[in-house]
Image 1 (cartoon, rainbow, N blue to C red):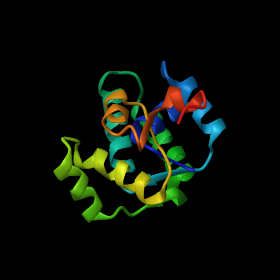
Image 2: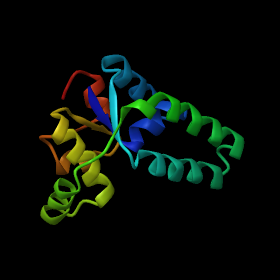
Image 3: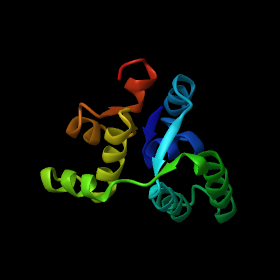
Length: 136
């Protein structure tokens, strides 16, 4: 099992430059856990694609429905105290802290599309390309 952040989810569902790496992550570990906030973050990513003309509203809705059906049973509530502790100790956002706190609570890696997050939490987070290659 891994914790997947919204970037990894987006790369998996929306065809992009790094999508193949996201698919390799899924082949390596198909059990993805997500905090409940992933849906809002995923919708924000979809909004960006719609605003830039990369997808239609109908396409975005389809991606949201497919990802929701896939990850709906994998959603976890995150300990607020653990999230606040991470926020107080680092300069990460509350959103990032939720993913990190969930991964730490479950004792599994957080697989992310963001190198800065993996660098900030090297004991918890790993970039998706590295994880796909068996590192992390």
